[in-house]
Length: 100
Image (cartoon, rainbow, N blue to C red; front, side):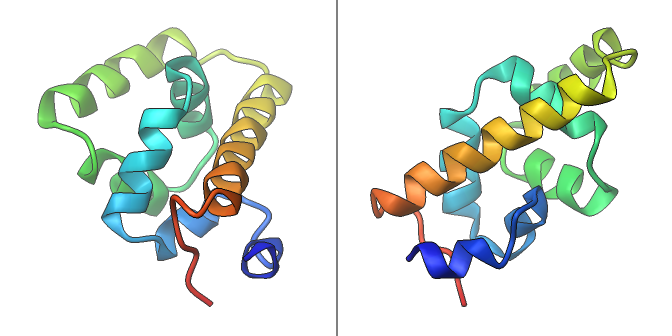
């Protein structure tokens, strides 16, 4: 399983995951990490995340991201790395599958 993930060391992996996997990642990720990570990703990843939460949750994430808009780049990268760790853990436990 790990082999499939090592080819993708960034949150771009989210783009190839099914909605169930993305929802599982969101549930397992600390809210502050999710908000900060959204500041440092492209629109496609943001849209995939927002698509997999309720409309109200998406609005709240967007609003809450304003509080972190001045976050240090290192903090944003740390949050992104923590989400990558969540993805690795979920994959290693067999809770999500990363397509080849």
